[in-house]
View 1 (cartoon, helix red, strand yellow):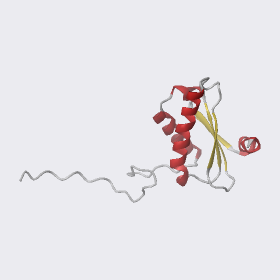
View 2 (tube, one colour):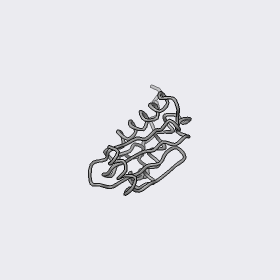
View 3 (tube, helix red, strand yellow):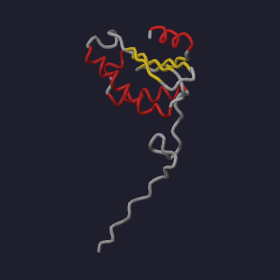
View 4 (spheres, one colour):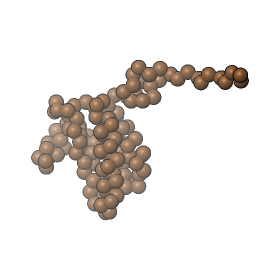
Length: 128
C-alpha cells in the first residue's frame, strides 16, 4: 500500500485547500481513495477517525461521478476544527477544482440529476 501512495504522490496531480490536499493519479482504474490524517492534524484518535469517516462517506457518494484514478486525501490541521458538512463540502469543492468531478450544471440541484428542471411553485389552495 505504501508503494501505491508513493506512486500517487510522485506521479499524481496535487490540488490543495486550507482543509486538505488531494493527490490524484489517473491510472485507468475505477476511482479509489486513500486517506492520510496524521496526529499533527488531531492528536486524538476519535477526531482523526471522525475526519476519515466524513471524507469516506462523501467520496462514496461522489464515486460514480468521479474520473478514474487513485485519490489520496491528506488532511490539514484546519480539518480538526471543521464540521462534518465543511469537510464534505471541502472535498467536493477540491475535487471540482482538480477537474476530477464535473461542475454542477446550471439549474440542477442534485449531483447526477441532469434531467431535473427548475421547480414550479406549489399550487395555491383553492379555499373550497
